[in-house]
Length: 289
Image (cartoon, rainbow, N blue to C red; front, side, top):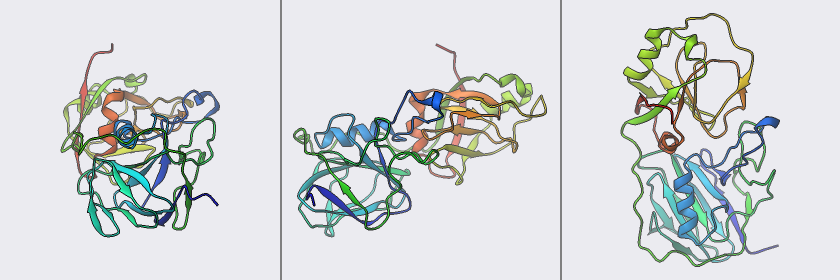
């Protein structure tokens, strides 16, 4: 049994293995998946000396606790949260050495939703279609962590970053999502299109890795019925029968039958991953490039 491993002591509300995902398989019905906040995941890898393709852990709200079988270097990024090693405070946003057998705890977020734990060598679960990412929609990749799970680690590839800490964006107090018109904007009344880009919505607690759901005024259809299933992209703003916009995130389905009124710029989606329920949401129209 290898000593390059992490034992999950507390799995938390939802902790998954994530990397840069598995692009290129949408034609087979496989979403890209991957970390919802890619810049935060990439930073966690850089801080511990990993390459950009290494797998990290993505926690949700209440963190997790792990015990390494050998001494490891870790870094926690993304949503700010307390980090401790056997009860002793440790750095958030910088490399931390955790001796073998000691308890690493990633605590409840103080702002934002998702924290990222990078470990020197990366989480080395078996890849599926070239990725170690957990995909909650298709079920590909490792299942969400449970207490007692043992996660193998790869061999460290590089030295940890020599920094005390690095700047990271704060979770949004207001989520501003730049949008271009979607392929089915004409399925909505002119008033509905105006409402989308002038009214303030709020992040719903019903969202997940598949999509960010919103609360607010329902968007009125100009056409009845539903579409035959058609391709869906990351950032698509789909409108289900209740009229409240849903922004598709990394685990989104590759096809869908509800009309897409707009599409969010990819650069704005990491902030969507960190927006807590109740956060105001504004959809701001921009020109297509």
